[in-house]
Image (cartoon, rainbow, N blue to C red):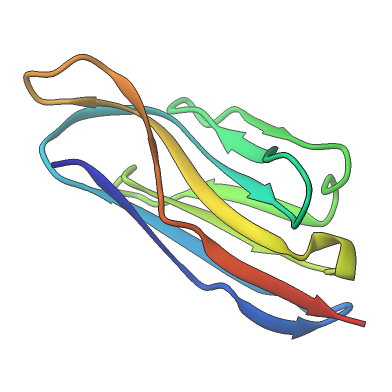
Length: 120
């Protein structure tokens, strides 16, 4: 069973930093794109950033210059370094990955979400 497990959320003051981590586990043949989405109360889930297996990255305009996405050496982990956080960044952050499991077709997988709260 393929799963994504996130960690690193929490409460931080405005201007502070947090680092989110997400690890994929299970019978995995390959992982293509990995990324982060977020959902604030009363709002739709939105893309924050993603990184491809080749290392190409894409960021939402609202986080450019403040957030950095990266993948671990083992390529089954993804990180989101968040700097200069503002209350507008408060949301549940979800890890997402396009994974090709062993003996199964590729599919999108989601983590359980981790809460990030930024106080003013």
